[in-house]
Structure formats: structure tokens, C-alpha cells
Image 1: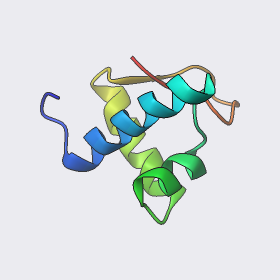
Image 2: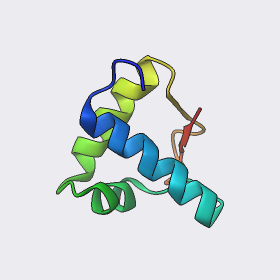
Image 3: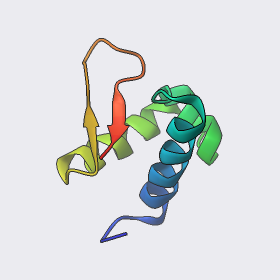
Image 4: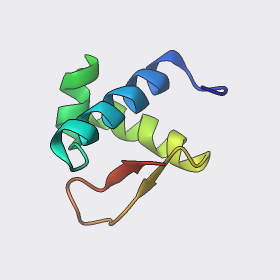
Length: 70
């Protein structure tokens, strides 16, 4: 998966699996719990880095489940 960190790859894979099962994007807290991170803010940091390279996109600022994998 390109030049992503191990953590970013884990997040991307987990998000894709979650969307496939649940039909919607996960919240930051769900991602944190799913990949073993203690803070939703650390997930947000990783998602912002992934957004910068086009791996994810934000579908709406105010939505709780705004991040989708590309």
C-alpha cells in the first residue's frame, strides 16, 4: 500500500472492512477502538495525513462519520 506507515495501513484496512459490513463510515472513536489506539485525536491526525495523499476523503465537516476510503 504505497508509502503509508504501518498504522495508516491498519486504519485503511479496518475502515474498508467496517464499511463493507456496516454500510457507513466509522466514527473516530470506532476507528480508534478497532485499531487499538487510545485517542480519537491520533486517528484524526492519521486521517488528515491520508487525506493529503488522496487515500481518504472527508464527505462533510459536520458529519460524525465523514471519512471514507477512496
